[in-house]
Image (cartoon, rainbow, N blue to C red; front, side, top):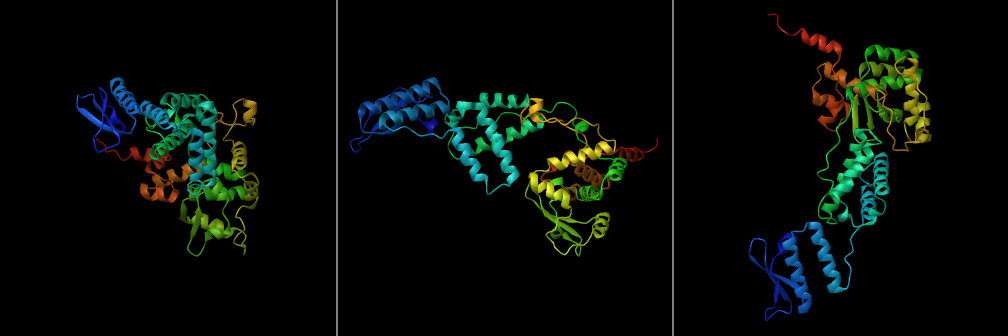
Length: 391
């Protein structure tokens, strides 16, 4: 509607049966336009008409038009047009997300928004519609100087969601983040994260204690994340139907996973427990409950990789000692517990399991994410070349 009132040569007139003055002018195409000012004072109506004309001649943007109309409203009515600041809208948006997302996702969103607001400083308190693409682009580049490309893109996705909702809710006229592109990852992704080979799995199992051995088998035969596996209790195990049932912590996805024969054999070897609330891996479960995160367990698995000769021993440095703060760039290891998720995915595909079935079993939300976890092994490639005909 605002674009329809950007018109040319201003004058005012009033119908004998109306108490309001009408602004008359020509638009940028030369067509005559008539718009009611909803104003009974001729001088004020004339000023409104002149502002319409000025807008047409200078071809201001939608944001500038809103500012002009807000100023006119304040001058005519004596009341300022209240506009939500970025900080205020971000707080409302995050509060509305509480029943929709899990705790970890909420913490991620909250942390990401806090970083954005801290970066913008006093600019976070201006109307959200005044935030520009240039400012958000600078913030993306600021993150990229400290974070990996993937993490920077995660922050960008959050910003895009925020401003998309702001536009939908009518608190800003456009989305300044809409056309900011994601960052291309530098380096070779394949060298950063990869699945285990069978030989590497045997090496880890050889140095693992019974509880870690159990977690590794669960990770390999279900493809689930460490935090979700540590949270498993006997309540999640249905030996009669041969299924594991769980709700994933990251995506809140309900999973019913048929037991692989080898995993069933392992579960049946565990000490039976009449209390279904008893965790399958008590020591790891206790650590997870105390810390609220799986980081300590991930570090412990890293120590296993060192013992197995699959990772070089490196000193653990705090964020503070590295001078990077909590959003510092993380050291990426090509092997971790999450590699079991990649291993399971790759094994399924190399065994000829249809992609849709493998995706559902592992629990990936999209085909794009699922394909990123597929790595074709050397043996599968060697078998493939034997399919060529002899000429």
